[in-house]
Length: 375
Image (cartoon, rainbow, N blue to C red):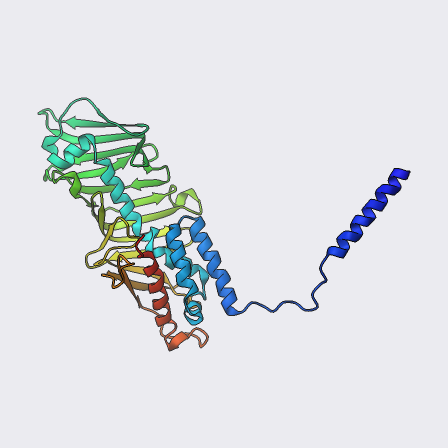
């Protein structure tokens, strides 16, 4: 009984101490956040998502935050009426237009060694019939097999990858080059395998390309085999049902790559669970070089953008061109002009008297300039 009384006394003392340490309830509720504070919270959430999803590199995220923090409230308000649109538009300088570059650089890696390199350098006459030739992968295996006709003339080259690691990328599946009966300077390139042809298990290629052969592996040129389409499926494509899955469908595309640069022309559509964006290059297309996070000067593309003025389901177009920078800290200078932007809007949305067109163009230019900073 004594022990119970002592325990009750200790509990009572603790309860009194805890009660005494609690803060007094406020007499009034704190004021609601100002528009600037609300925008800052939205910006922070968007930037955090971009960083966590690895949409942008950490150095780019830092530049993006600086761009947002130094924009004026009116400009931010013009774009942030629908915060999801900002996340979409910011990423336009990254994954949506770099899909073709990813494909091009990986295809270049596949023809860098073995029998495929012989085909690229010397053409079909430089490919010898015989047993399969293995390529030394960092891990896994790859075997090149040549099929010849009765006269000993090479007709096709198959590259079979089984977890082969080359240049930090893991390849699985089959790549098949087939000789064109009418033109020895080109070959049909198709992708096959039980799960298609995959890179790092998350990117899958589907469709056929036409590639040039005999010009040297450093002059790798490919295009979509008309009238077919070519697809780049990430995380298995939308059919997998993953929120991070995407599909990029190329109706027309040209890839010209080497170890340092890549040039792309395309008419394509990028689709994810939440958005669908059309992309069409103009002028010299898009060219990319190591060390620059955006297309090089001379590049240009039309890109679909959602309208951030409460018009759900409507899409505008941005004409984005990259020119020589006047600032040594930039590798290119982007210019954005909105096409088909609405001219009628509510008084609330009529920022600058042009339905926020100028403010949105300025903001997009600033965001895309951040991507062009030299690392």
